[in-house]
Length: 146
Image 1 (cartoon, rainbow, N blue to C red):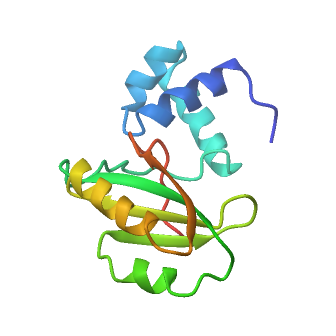
Image 2: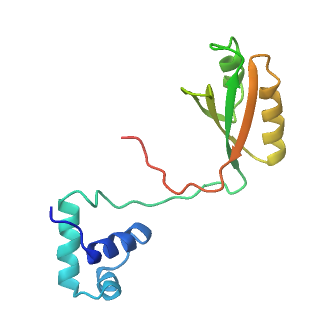
Image 3: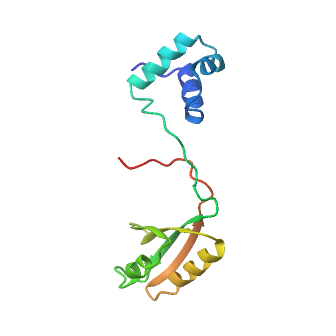
């Protein structure tokens, strides 16, 4: 494919925020005719620069709090910590990772109070050396596996 020019980048910038924008409106915003805009979009699709259009669905239940717990263990493997984590229905995903951390635990809870209780319970496990919490403010990009 040819190198992207300023108009292509304008198209991509607009489509990344407004994937369902009418072609006529897109053309007007970038200063090209509808047919020229259509040709550019088709070329971007054909070359794979635009791989698809999607609905970006926000959190379904606005009352839920999503957080990541970054866990450092006393030693690995830590007997019983995964079993304990599996008992909590709020735990959505546990990933063993390399580096300074040992586990990244994604949780979804109905309130900050429940997050604190869950966090305190996990942190009090004998195999946990340190636990840091990061609350998700929003998800900017989320893709389905596949």
